[in-house]
Amino acid sequence: MKKKIGVLTLLSATSLSVLAQSSSVEMADGLRSSGMIYVVVSVMSVILAGVLVFLFSIDKKVSKLEKNGAKG
Image (cartoon, rainbow, N blue to C red; front, side):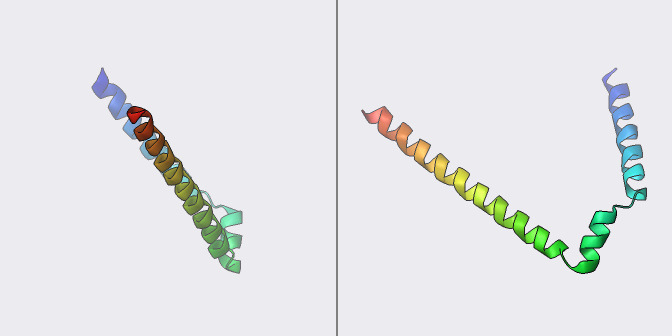
């Protein structure tokens, strides 16, 4: 039964990827042609870097609190 579900999932995923490749996204084409795609990618990279820095700083603070809580 698991084998049938796996094969069905694989076939449906393959067919969906073929359908996704045949469609054209006008917004992406417009951004590429005007060079604005680089702006979008750079803004997304800055946002991702900010979120990662924030998460690491929160993790560091929580670890420090856990360490101090265990002593006291």
